[in-house]
View 1 (cartoon, rainbow, N blue to C red):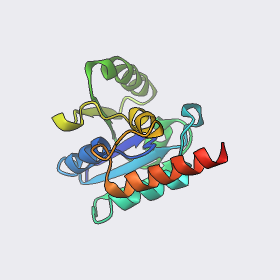
View 2: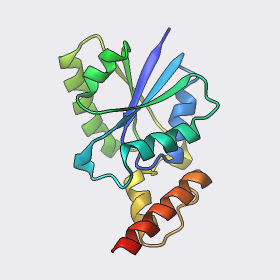
View 3: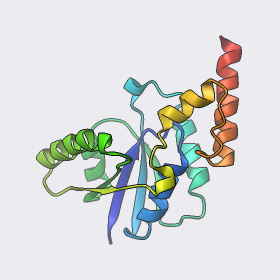
Length: 164
């Protein structure tokens, strides 16, 4: 049984992320979407909020599991008894960073492979950080997000503005 770990912050989950998840289900028997706590990225949503959003989007995808994790990815992959890390490459600019991560992970555990998928053309430039920035300035991000996630993002940004 093939199992892949798809790690990320998913802050929030975009249509590009969803595209990769759906396509990965055609390749692997099980996909674990691993939501990284990653406080260094200063996420807008809590880990629990991100897990809830991804679970909502992946509802009905029986081969997909959504969990949070904190710590070293390679340790999480080992704990999950997986041998594949799934990563998305949007553009050439992603490659150098992703290549470094894959190389470091291989040095830590040579039994774990990194597999890269490129998103569909209409999601090539969809980055959660860019989506949040556009939304924060009142831009329309509906083409980047599932309508449910778009509402959650709008509500979160409104709450943030009302606190300021």
